[in-house]
Length: 341
Ligand SMILES: NC(=O)c1ccc[n+]([C@@H]2O[C@H](COP(=O)([O-])OP(=O)(O)OC[C@H]3O[C@@H](n4cnc5c(N)ncnc54)[C@H](OP(=O)(O)O)[C@@H]3O)[C@@H](O)[C@H]2O)c1
Image (tube, rainbow, N blue to C red):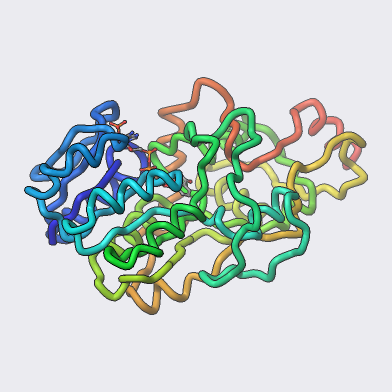
């Protein structure tokens, strides 16, 4: 199968490209050339900006891909452009979406109030408000203010001439994670903190994570299996409580400390979690397992070990802002630990 990947040279993309190539497919990557990845021999490259993708239509006609995997659809306009560019050329589009389309995400952020039943399925209700990052002063991964995967999904699934598949990703971790999701915990462990304190509501909260190589396999299956046509999937592997996740990270990191769940009255009076932990955010992944035969290729232990090795060799220059974690400072933790002992 001939596959064109838009993006594909930074974090999740290279793992998908490697997987597709290993499955025997002919893969071409389209990107600006600003980020470099070691891609397998035989993977072709086309350089260009997605903003001018329609002007480059002739080269895509010559390539004639069976499936276009668009890794970097952020806005409604991105999706309109992709559909226009590949209509009459490709047989199917696969669009990378996110679990942030679910209404549960807005409830978690405190923007909507009714708790959504979990686990989330692909048919769970979607957010009622658009542009989830619009009011954020800084946005993860330089997402534009009009970022909205719901609008992306509507465009790609609503095109009668070019069928599509959607895959909604969880919080992805692994080597080259630009958000360094594990780093704030790992830093504490590597600084030999005796304990990490989690507010009890957060300790019990369950979110959805996916290791990059597992997520890449799931994406590759949606690209290569025609049964995925006009279907929506989501994927996740690590979906335990935050305390359990932290324990697993600690074990993989060789940390000797303890994870302690703290009742609210131990916390400083003005300290509040910035999200509603009554709303869990984990997903039922039965559909992709049953329909496409997905199962994890990397165990949670190995996934954490690989990620920790990479984080230790590539610490971020500043403490990451987008990990979804809210931790107490060391002085407050020490003071609470003294009160507890
Ligand atoms: N990370 C997560 O936890 C998470 C969670 C949910 C969903 N997602 C979704 O996963 C996708 C991100 O995949 P990723 O991690 O592989 O992306 P990434 O690391 O941000 O890489 C971006 C890729 O797109 C290329 N690119 C960027 N701007 C471009 C442009 N204007 N024209 C052409 N190419 C361009 C980059 O290459 P050049 O710089 O060379 O152009 C690179 O290959 C997004 O759709 C995101 O919403 C991620």
